[in-house]
Amino acid sequence: MKRKPAIILLSVLVVFFAVVLFLFISSLLSQQWEMEQHTEELTKLVEKTMSDRAKAEKLAAELSVKEEKYKKKLEKLNALLRVLQEEEEAVVERQLAAEPHMPDAKEVEQFAANPIPELVAMLQASINASDHLRTSALIAALKSKNEESVDYLIGCASKPESNTKKYYYLLILAFLKDARALPVFQDAMVPGESGVVRDAAATGLMSIPDVSSLPLLLRTLKTETDKNIKMKIVTALGLIGDSRAVEPLKTVSIDEENNTIGSFALTALVRIADPSTVDFFAETARNSTNADRRLIAVIGLKSIGNIKAKAVLKEIAQTKGPIAREAGKALDELSSGLKAGGEPEGEDK
Image (tube, rainbow, N blue to C red):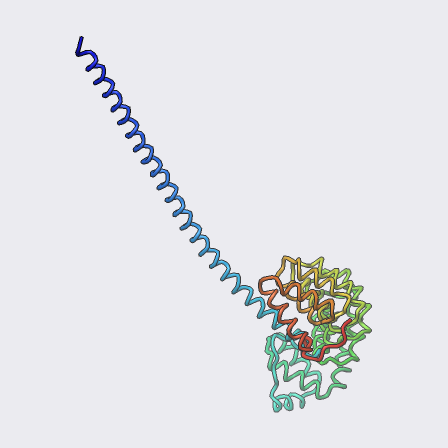
């Protein structure tokens, strides 16, 4: 009986140490589990960091590609701006030919010795062959006897042997740019004429921008479906520079927003530079999804250059990207007293 308390005490001690050992092992296992959890979280964090880094590198590469594309677009639009700043004759020359060519004076003199009908026939052949240098020399030869050449071509265009012949007569008259041919071009723009004839007539009206053609061009613009003719019409309206063309050109610019005609119409509005278009250019520069249109709109604001236009340019310049940089450049030029063409800025309107 005396051993029983000792046994009970021993049992209690055993149970106590067992509980302590259990708690100790449980604590170790809990710490191990927590360490495993922290290790897993740390692993996920490292993986996420590496993934984010890869995404950042990919995004940087994509931004670099986009920046390069924007640079190319800027170069293209700066070239467009230079064209807009040139004299009307230079603008039309670029529209009529792929690139300027200076004919050799001796060759021109030799060609001029030929009768006008032969010169016209040779010129048709050179246009067909896309021989720009020979074409330039033949045009210069015809210009050397301009009055006779124009009279002859007007007569031929009035009674052509075919639509193809009439097309070439009108195109050559367009190259000569003599105002006496205006009625011939205007008459050839009627809906009943063939597409090729109307195309050459549109080229002529573009080569001789005259306000007398304005009503005809505005009427035709509403119904024209041929893209080439429509582009020449909007270009002619821009070169004429009459404010009556502003609203029709705005309409075309919006309706044809996602194609070349829309950009041509917007460029024509830049050429006219009417103060009433500031809001239109501002809306386009801010919200258009087409980067080319936004940049052309910035050029338009710059060409107007009044207080309201400068306020919009300042707002755009405070954003980010190529368009903001172009707006900043435009502001710098305007604040130095120079408009897009390098002429002294006029009074703000």
